[in-house]
Length: 445
Image (cartoon, rainbow, N blue to C red; front, side):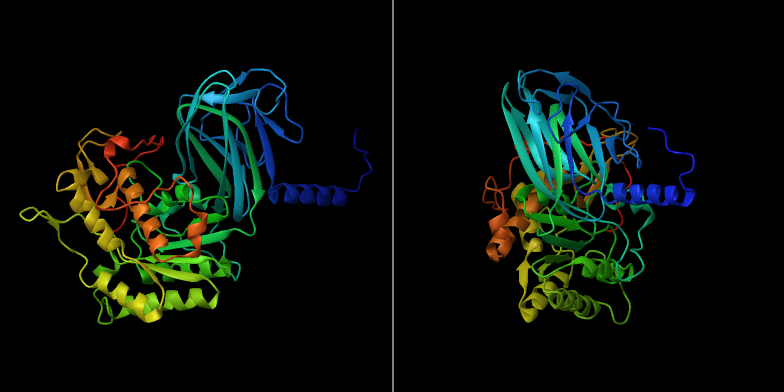
């Protein structure tokens, strides 16, 4: 119907504004992928649906998939999109926690998929379905922005301005030898427990291959009901985390029943002022983080710094290069009566169990030309690759169990016990590289 020409312009403007606001604040979606019949209540998604802020959803970053229709009575599972290359699907969403349910499989063929969210947060390891079989998996994901409700915003580093973690949408990365995506459903998860992560490059969601950290691997181990909100960033200390308004941001959204995991030390160690040091500013700030979390009714958890790979090749022992900082963290945890996850001890055990040479396979050690543009070898004894980050995430899980945190009941049933003295064999590790890679080392040492 043609709009009457006498419709008042100001009312038209109000209508369009209200429509735009309604679209921008939409928080629930049901997508049916493929060119076949569309399931009732679902929105059909075709390869031609390219993401734009106006559309609010679609295939992203110049990736797409092809559509296959198998027919049959089940509209949701009778068609799908597929690709043997990684593809991204994004949905515009406001800050919050969301339950995201994906349905994968092919009525007539096999499928193989791994799933990551945002800046390479691992959700689903390589998962295969046989012909006629489907898998439906649900994850609780956190979407964050830099705005602070009490005023101001987080001071991001230049490298963070393009990170998927800080944009205004939720992005899913489908990877594997043959993804067959049938459906995605997104609903708010307002009652989810949120685990906030405060830390540095050993914790942060690293955007690019081959860099990784334990914070982006740990979502894989939780059932729906727990969202990981990773506010860590490379190069940060307790002081710069606070100074860039990240603690303020966390405290503005943390609620009773949530958790704050705190791991610093690598960069704090480089601060050399008269009031700096493990038992001075580091201890004081660590206590501040703990007390502020407690004021909000949240549970603080202290983690000692991950060890650097620093072998005495004569003894085969990994030598502590973090000075008194791990001990200071242990003392604060004891004095404040909060849970301690001793990652420094566990990663030392992990490196020693792997040995002098094989421990390099857990960190960013690669010969020249392994990645595009990498003309020189990479040899970094602080930063992990995906395999190392995954093993350390398992150490964190063991720390959660040892402290009998309430999070234990949310651990996925396929989370086996882990002993850092007996790490997983690298040959058993399956990781599909994301499309983006860089030779630029993260901030921090």
